[in-house]
Image 1 (cartoon, helix red, strand yellow):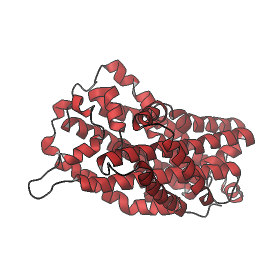
Image 2 (tube, helix red, strand yellow):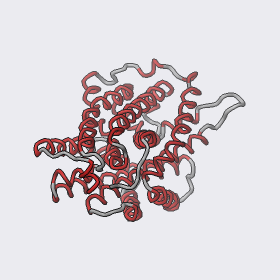
Image 3 (spheres, helix red, strand yellow):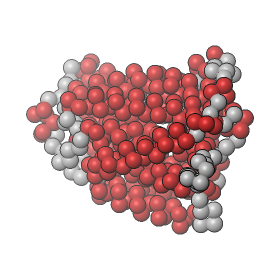
Image 4 (cartoon, rainbow, N blue to C red):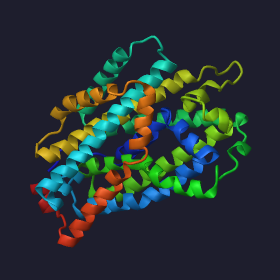
Length: 367
């Protein structure tokens, strides 16, 4: 039986942070370039498209109480196919962590520390990631319980402070470049919510009764926050200028000034940015370690953290420049991760139903 037991509140907060953290990179600019003024609508519809995939994942996890997704996969699909699926899950998190580390480095260095060497900034960030991931998902969830309300409070304050700058007419036409394209974009964009797979790594540490409600609340909270962020960005910045902003959320913080009372709010934004990014990458590395533990049949995933972080660090520096990183993110994580997060659990659920396999608490204890 897994030793860690995490609370549903911390797990839900962590899931939301893992999804929303991408808004602090170039992700908003990339979607706005594709969807124009309908970016907010595409984000909302992408959540609706991804919802059935989450339901499949949730149903699979509840069929095998006390087991993580990796353990369920090995039990249902057998040795070799189970190992392949676990390897894909673990590789996905390492790859995502590596690309996000590079995006964070590029954006943070350009916006805050333009003369700091990339290697120095990335090394410092990686050390913090190793420490946080090694402390385990239980510690990360507990920290999320305390920090998430503060971080969300700062984001809400940013939204309220920009009310006088908003013009909702700027997000028209609501269907962007046309109804047809706007209704097709949500299908590949559903990959934006692929971090819901984190629930599969947390499943063995959560009470089975809390699994679905925790995932459901976190999923729709993430969809809501992502959608609202695009509405605010679109209402403050006209589409042509928004499509040219490298880091739209940072620029949003820079335009806030309330007389002599509040200036340079981006200083607070940088703190929010750093914590969201740290939690996202540490969660990705810890989840990769959990899936690799299940693949190898190990007792503990923590000893794997350093090696997986090193691999992610290497992946982060493989692209030659941030432009290539953005292209890789667009053509892989933002477009083709839905088969990993939604289709593979659905296949496992289908095989489990076909074979008549179902978990039990006694089986979970022995596994």
